[in-house]
Image 1 (cartoon, one colour):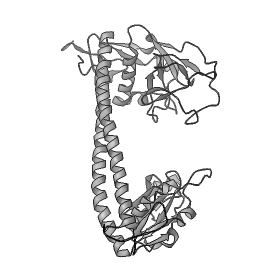
Image 2 (cartoon, helix red, strand yellow; image 1 turned 180 degrees about the vertical axis):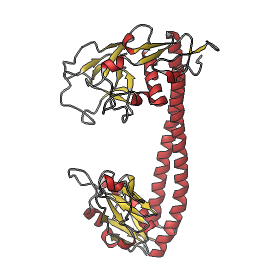
Image 3 (cartoon, one colour; image 1 turned 90 degrees about the vertical axis):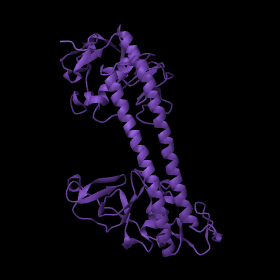
Length: 404
């Protein structure tokens, strides 16, 4: 029974619930024509890449998954829909409408729509059900969480009248553009706050807290001048960095002590190899990343660690001065780029007396905590905006909001 121009419909998409009465369900096989069969035969054809923001011309062919030769890839024409049929459980990439001519990997589905279907609406629809209900992740097949063409053809599409499709696209274009602009402003603000944080830390650990202090040159570029009662010491005379230990996945998942890698917590373990607090330094992966932890942790083999047994400096101050030194600029070109302990040991650091180290730490803890709070507040706003965008798209393409 229809109510308020809506009716309940239940096929293989019962999660939709009610649809406007002039909307219909239709299988993909009735609305898409797959690639026209035209293959790239030229090395001069622009190479396209499917990204989270659409189909883009790939300007750097040495970046990402590239091949030496793109002859044999399928051709893409303006207006074609490009869809990735695999890894729905992992990839944030899904689909896009091509704006330019080019070629793209044969792993993608390249399609044209039949009459009464607006390509941009299809793209919004796919994104809506991806993030609205994780449809593709839940209804894909196999270990790669994928569809083949036959399975894709049997997926149901929600089809409003063509004019309604165009109205929805126009509405979502405007709304998502507004959201994107706000998110971009938040990103820039966060970057400025992070830069301010580094600037304040660097100023405090290299110049101290007394603006009237007399200075002397160090001859070290990143430090510049320091107060006359400070010293410039090589790191090996300040602290030693211990190697984290190797743990199996099974061991990482046991116990009650946090296991720490280059990028942060990766599990727990019952025995810590450090006392609190401890500085975790990325050795592989996110090499040079600095984290000060105020609880028992197990530093794994992608890290170095420094605790109170490893330094004659105040540990919180040491954390700040290591951040200012930007150790991520130091890498060793081995099989896996990483942080060289020997290079760090021979790097010069400013070194005040222990009481001044503690004063600098107290000052920086207070001011950086406030900056971190502001950064986290804006990150949460960005997260809510992304959730709102996903909800907006899902509700628009499934008829749950009326678009004029």
